[in-house]
Amino acid sequence: MTARSFEEVMAHVEALSVRFAERAPGHDRAGTFAFENVEDLRAASLPRLPVPVELGGDGFNLYQCVQVLRRIARADASTALGLAMHFHVVGTLAETRAWPEAAFARLCREIVAHGVLVNSAASEPEMGSPSRGGLPATTATPVPGGFVITGYKRWVTYAPALRYFLVTAQLNGGIGVFAVANDAPGLTLIDNWGHSLSLRASGSFDVQLKDVFVPAEWHVEQREVGQAKRGGLPAGWPTCAFAAVYLGVGEGALLALAEYAWQRTPTALGRPIAELPSLQRSIGQMDVTLRAARAVLEEVARRWSEHPAARPAMEAELAAAKHLCTNAAITVTDIALRAAGAGGLEASLPLERHFRDARAGLMHPPQDDRALEVIGKSVLVSRRQQAFT
Image (cartoon, rainbow, N blue to C red; front, side, top):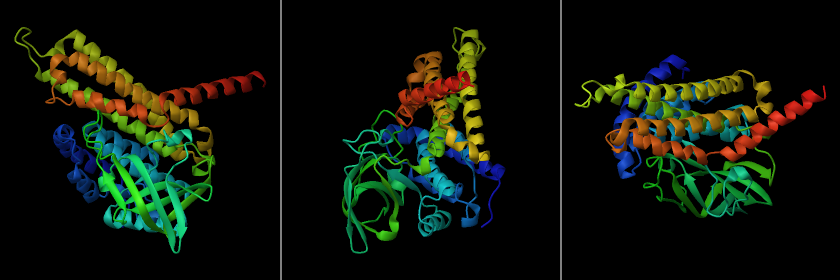
């Protein structure tokens, strides 16, 4: 299978985004999962984008995948987030090769041939954020030929569409990661999500595992408690993928408000509100806020992609990109609602959906407090080093 060009893929993404935007309001109101969007993603072979070329994929790097996610998120953040989860898992594995070679090759073959999707299942009710170092209550018990897993996971984005759930579990005093197939006996999806504040169509279901058997070959990672993931590298793919989704949400709000401004012509005014200086100032503030965040994200994603030797020292840069993009989305969606007035509260416009969806960005790692701590520490260490040289 021949790898596709970035321009070819983006043309597909542009066309798909029109369909996703049309479907998004209905799924948001009903809190339903957009299975038809998944089929469109597969038909366009988007799941294979970060799969290495030598394994049949397109070999897209982080920078290229960020552009894909931004464009889809303008139309439908729920669909973009599901694809972001898949991208960051596969993209990270493509770079680190942390899995056994045979397991990763098999996963890639299934992605290329069938468009299968994968995501982590790590969060738990009593655990808090896995990014803060919590130990899973889920357990894996060795049995002949594999392992039996029992536990309960929360907020597994795109759960109805996943082929594999990457389940973290206690094993031999450490933490194991197991690729659990969606048809494994004892695995149950529980829809507790559809009427949440944000991303109602993201299928962020709970996953219950009761004595689920996993073959030994799908025990794909093992580490000690407290041991660094990804060989000690910062979370380049997940951080930038999340940032791209929420930046896209903000960009979607800007485009929607601009279109509304030309359509809205109050009789008392006699001309579109787009001609009002106050509206123009609002649009201008939104645009410069998004420009700044976009510039940082693109620079960080490009640096990660093109300069592998720089990756170990990029934690603060990554944190800055995530912080700026998430908060840019929150800021501009707030401005958009204020500028649109009462009409912005109606579901006939996507502004209130973008406003709600942007808030979910605060929950993805690194959260704002952690991001600012990392950034501040980096500045202080750098300054101290300069002072002693």
